[in-house]
Image (tube, rainbow, N blue to C red; front, side):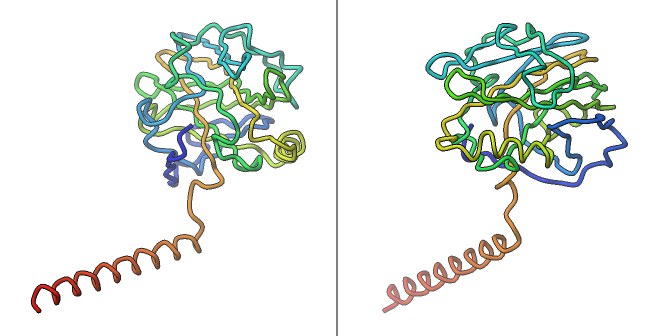
Length: 255
């Protein structure tokens, strides 16, 4: 994923107005985050699926870090830590799988994730009229080479899918309990930056599409207040230097 990925945060409508929270999930929807400017031309996806009714798609990691897709790359819910009981079936992946704007299996280093709290997944729905859509499952998988190390999942039902793909997306983060699990399993391991991630998902009540997922780094999405202060100070200093240089150039020309 490109390092220049930028995330805009804004207050959204209260979660109860458009989303029904799941009973339990490791990947949880955060209604306080609105991620804008996420059209296909802006940021590559991890997974893109399309269909009517219920659509399901899976990608996995092949030899040499190649992307594999389809039902053969789906994993059983039994392999998911604290799974939600749903196993994805695949088959709704858009063609071609070689389209790196619609599919990806990046390394953790490429995403800049340093701990589990950095993990963010953004769901983009393209439904006519912003209709309701039900994310029955989103599973995030971690691989060392072709070996599955572990996986976590989540779900969320949205009463409407506005603002939709290409305008903004709905962000999921890892809950506190699963952060501890992933930090021990993944982020405390030597060389974890070389591990890859892959996604699978099942979405119900779909009437359009494509629906897509991408990864973001929640750890560096918004500068801390101190960082903003340093940025403002830096801009002021640069402006002062430029003004002094301009004054020096004018005096030189007049001499």
